Structures are given as structure tokens and as C-alpha cells.
Amino acid sequence: MPLKIIFMGTPEFSVPTLKTLIDQNYEVLMIYTQPPKKSKRGQKVNISPIQSFSEKKNIPFRSPETLNNNEYEFIKNLSADLGVVVAYGKLIPINILEATKLGFLNIHASLLPKWRGAAPIQRSIMNGDKKTGISIMKIQEKLDSGPIMASHELELNSNSTYGEVEKKLSDVGANLLIECLQTIEKGNSKFVEQLHSEATYAKKINKKEAKIDWNSNADKIVAHIHGLNPNPGAWFEFQKERIKVWKAKKLLLNGRPGTVLNENLTVACQSNSIQILEIQREGKNKQSTKDFLLGKKISQNSLLT
Image 1 (cartoon, rainbow, N blue to C red):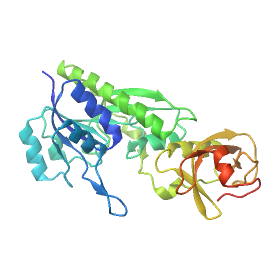
Image 2: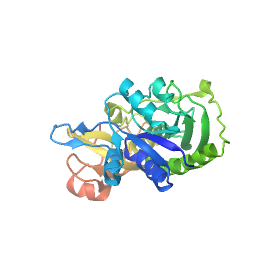
Image 3: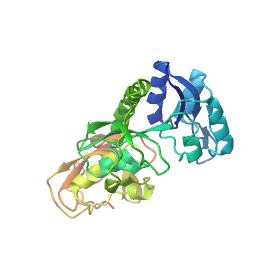
Image 4: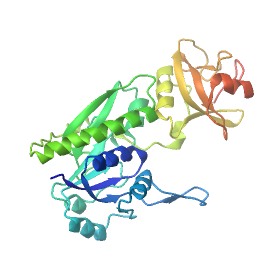
């Protein structure tokens, strides 16, 4: 019989896994997701993609502020075989990890032990990594430290963006999880301990660090731009306006860092330069650089900060 599962997830990245579990006829006893959040102006309440999916499918869900003892008792009484966690956004207390027969599995978007933590895809791209991937591990009390059941690699290149890679990995993770569940059902599951001495950490992205540092080299700036596309977006300032950059490529031209080198919006870096390909003014839609320059003049020799 298929495993009886408790699912925990919140963002769009989690949705393909939940959908695949249902499509594969796994019994999802309960869904946990983060509670709705008010928008910055407080006028609108934003529900998570997982809550939205659950409501459309008429699947019961819970969105508690904390996983307290009441939730422990509730989960324990469900008599679930396994918990599955995909970007839930909260650490799972140890008593809840022990409240299912087989514990909890986590789908993590990196090749563990590299990039444990909150922003593995962004940090991997920003670091200029040549590959990333999915790891499916058993959750232990320490963050992203549990033994690994399966992993899948995905190659990266200088054009890879956070949004594109996230979409690919969400689908990879969903399919890889089903393979793991089938292995568990056959009684053949094996877990391999991580090399904890090689662990690195992907701290949450701070919006302030999204500003482009023109004193970095061109490769690093391109990786910075693509690693923050679509969220929160890399940016620079020109004439007191914050302008976001979504796509760029490296060129071999040189000059004073931050200086516009030609009419195509090529900008000098600490070494080499970048050509901006996609850009966005405050309050406007994304544009190609060609269209952008029709409305906002940034001439040769301008200095961007």
C-alpha cells in the first residue's frame, strides 16, 4: 500500500512535489504551510502557493504560527508513515520528527553538504558554481545535516538564473522523491552520512547585498545578477534612481569600474565589463536594454553607483 504522508511546504517550489504525490495516489493525510501574510501596506492578505493549491483541490491544510505541542499531538494521532518537507520555512521540532513511523524526508535544493540553509540556489549561482542539484535526506535536529537517500545533479552556466534553475529543480525533486518512496515501500532504503567537514551555508539573501558592486570582476557581477533573478533583483543607482538588472553577459572591454563604456550600456567592472541585456526602472516593466535606452538616456562615460 502507498505510504501515508504528512506534507509540509510553502512556496511555489513546493507545489510540484505535492501535486506529484497526489497524482501518484499517495494518501496525503494533512498539509502544513506557513500562515497568510499581510502585504507591506496591510491591505491584502497573501496566502502561500501551497495553501492556494490545497484549497483548489479541497485538501485539508493547517497553517499554525508555531509547531507546538498541540500540533505534535495532532500529527501523532494521524498515524502517518512519513513526513515530507519541501521549503516549509520553519525548523521541525524533534518531537514532531519522531511523530511519524519513518520520520521525515526533506527535498533540499543543493548537493549537500554544500549550501545548507535558506538560499541554496541563489548562493550556488552567485558563487559561480558549475553544478547544483537536489538532495533528499532524512531530517535531523541540526539544519540540513541528515543522511542522504538520493541526489541528482544539474549543470549550471553563466546564463543560468535563479528562477530558471528553481523551476527545473522543483520538478527534479518531485520525481526523485517518488523514486525514494518506492524504494522505501520495497524495504530497500539506504542512507549515506554527509561529509560534515565539507559543509557550507547559504544564508538568507539580504536585500542590501543585492546592490551591484562594480569593483568586482565581470564574472562575479554576472553571477550576482543572475543569482538574484527574479528575487530580489540586482540593482544600481543612476541619477538617484534605483534600476534593476535582470540579465547580462561578460565582455572583455576595460575601464574605470562603474563607467558606461558605450551606447549599448556596457559597464566597466574591476576587470573586464558587462553588457546589460535586460533592465527595469522603478515602477516600470522589464525591458530589453535597447527599449530601455529609448526612454532613459544613460550616455557613454556616465558613472553608475
